[in-house]
Length: 102
Image 1 (cartoon, rainbow, N blue to C red):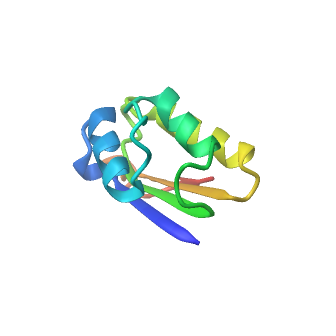
Image 2 (cartoon, rainbow, N blue to C red):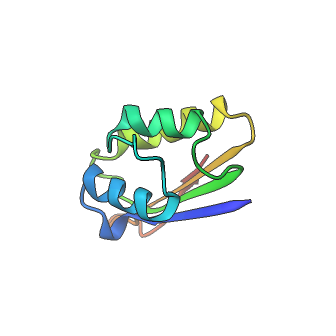
Image 3 (cartoon, rainbow, N blue to C red):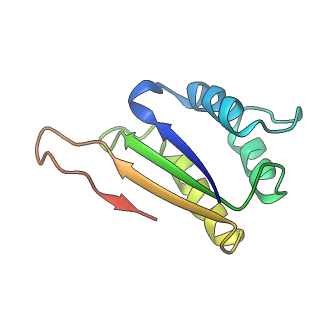
């Protein structure tokens, strides 16, 4: 199974994620660098699957990546085992812990 790791401590926005996605996953030329295009690439299986996507250091107090996380969770359901999604949220100053969900 292919594994893709995205460290959000170095990603400021969706454009940065798109750059990292293109570099790691090498989607087809039609990839439009937005959430709709990401959905199309994932669900049409235009990247190497089965795969595990791991997001680490996702900001938990800010919500710029919430739609992306929701899309990946839905893709995991839609692809029925061909895609596994794991997210680890960044530690906060209040609790110092990490949490993960699928």
